[in-house]
Image (cartoon, rainbow, N blue to C red; front, top):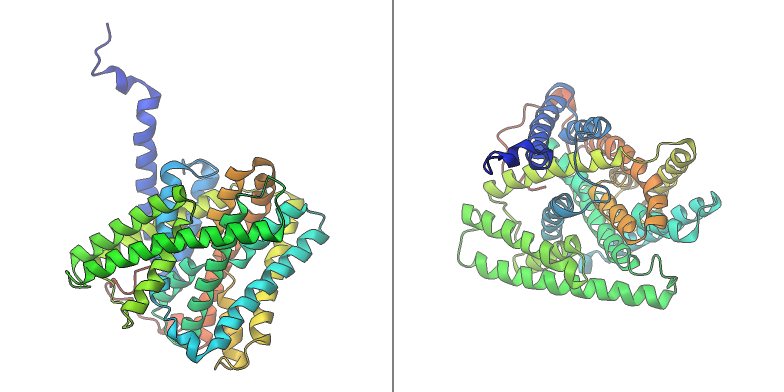
Length: 420
């Protein structure tokens, strides 16, 4: 008779979770070291090291997350995005748009032109309309995660940095609202404008409600504890995680709720947000996990000639549309054309938000979702890697970050720098 205390250790099923945890612990450690080496030796953003380690792990089959994402993998991705978007929202004062409304118009124009350009090119390649609509929505979203990670690594600051973060935050808001709403109609033939608008308003309303509750609770908590306290960091992370767990079952979008909560909190606390050091450290850990997960999943895409060709076409037209739209609508925004060009370059990266939407499309409709993923995953990986370099170049060339040869070893990372 087998000893009941020994039997569980003799099964592969019992050992698999522990081995998966071991893999991820090692991957995160290696990714952190790779990011440090990339920045110290080459002067490049740490996110490149994270992404390369994730891609290699995905090729080797070491990252055990399932596709489409679900369970712990999905929760960690949503939580990582939520923390980034919460910080991005807390940096965006709505009062700014009253003084400079052209920025909001520029954001809407950039998103609409990107959607239209992506839709037109992909339809010309012969893809079905539902697939094209999903890919065009994904193409709208830039990556606040990559952008804010590079800004923190290079310690950049200035009008180009602020404008790029604002525009990336806004087009992510549009993409999450429309993309999450599209999940309900993607495989049901309900593609009318009225149905899409109704579902979009529903997603936005539920997410806004969850975000308002989160902002209200955090506002109350900040009256009891100091913003830089360790307890504040724990409260923020715990409540953001609670919002992530609650928003999706209610019919909203967890990352969108966190973004709206950050926006609401900024209006109550208009002074610059000071991130607790402990929150910065925890958020940095989440961001490494997120970037490794994104690359490990994206490398599994279809790299065949047809899909790869469509991916390259989408990358080119998307980048061109974003830069062109920003230049065309740059008048009256207070930025010189040269600065606007660098802002456009900083809008190229795609990462976690795009992966989340792609995974959700696959879960909602296997047929349509698989076609979306075949093109979207290569686009995400390429733009994450190339885009991080483009952001770095844009910030250096605009004079808002020091060039690599003059960049000193960064000091001990503060919570404010590492919040993304």
